[in-house]
Image (cartoon, one colour):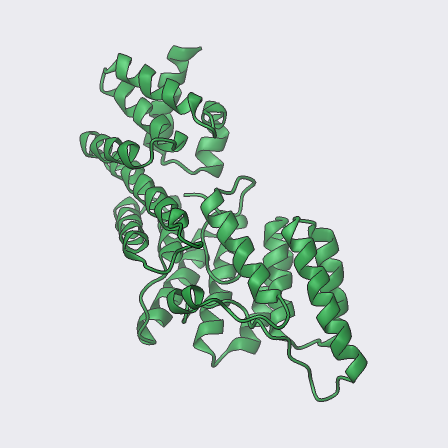
Length: 331
């Protein structure tokens, strides 16, 4: 359920492992948002008109001198370059210089919060998000974007109730302003609801997120719709896991079997299927699903680590237990 998102509201886990669909989306939007003299592409505008990218054109206060404007432009480029290679220390150093030039520029405060979340300095991130939120009040899009980022940082310190409150407000703002819910936010709220034991509600969020990913038209990279498909598969996989947690193992297994046909290279889906096959006494099918998971590019090594499965990937307790029993057979 798992992954972290950029400051524009992409998705859902502050821990060490980040799934590629969220990580790549986060990085791409952050880079675009901070790039000087650029404008969002039409697909990004259409699908994120509400929870959009951070302002893409540098702004300068009346007090800024011409030389400072040029410095801001150059520093932006340095910031993007550092962020793209995940050199967060260098990125924060550049941001400190930018904030000296433009101390009240929302873009730099929000970027500080986003990068601090990426480097797991959640307390710093929360302080920056709080400051950013005060500046953004009255701009519904900016409010939603910042609340979304703050919710992620709150997940990082296991503050599930307040993270849920922030995600709820992001989704409320979307509806109030006539926009469809963001599937990344729905998936993230599902994660938090699961952490609070609200598995019925979590399953509903995952299903809604999967449906929105499935029907989205703007999630393209050239002619590719890989990111949209990955998002849908991930959300529907989470739905299957929640379904198993709620006691409907047959239903969960049917969902996973359908997903393996759509995404045969998903080690996560096949590992989950192996656990459920074994729980149902279908040992040969469990072995086959596991072997197929291990033969994929991502491999099955992470799924041998129950701490990863429980704390990072955040499988529900019932599924972690079933996987543990299956792994005992393999040991």
